[in-house]
Image (tube, rainbow, N blue to C red; front, side, top):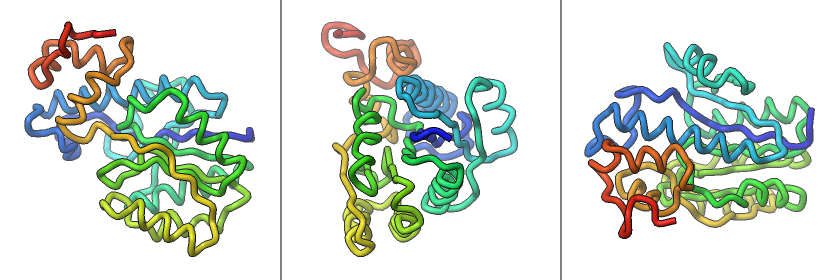
Length: 233
């Protein structure tokens, strides 16, 4: 298999399937529409990379049908059940068993990350054991490992309490204890609450799915247009 692999972690957009921290104030259908827009934008950003792109989705009763229908052009895989650390471990183990040299996982909730972040992550993995893109919520928007550090780096996935405010500090401590060189990428945000939508109004690419949703009638119910109009760019 090729040297680089980019795994997009996703779930099926569905009203009421999972609490997204967008509801309230967003109606469940609107929250699902936001997530779908985010996912499509992340996949568009991923497509610019030279890496092999794969879509790894959380299992539910209709997830396989949805992803086969909407993303038939992409290789797909089901995430194992369990906490994020276990799901990450399974995905990295599978990728490295397929002779990938560098693997990066990015979440479907971070559509506004700067254009150069994914490229930088793969470049950094030529020099370091792991890369991590933190968010304030504790759930990383990106984590990457290289095969040369596997399975030693597996401890980083299983021992860090992902999703907690202390996860960045815990990851640094865990990497140091395992003698892993961890490079922390610039902090960013995922679309995890209404305040993130307000920020994304300014950061979303003008031609993106999320920008179009924010400019729609539904989007304007929750986020006021930026000064100067819905598209200042």
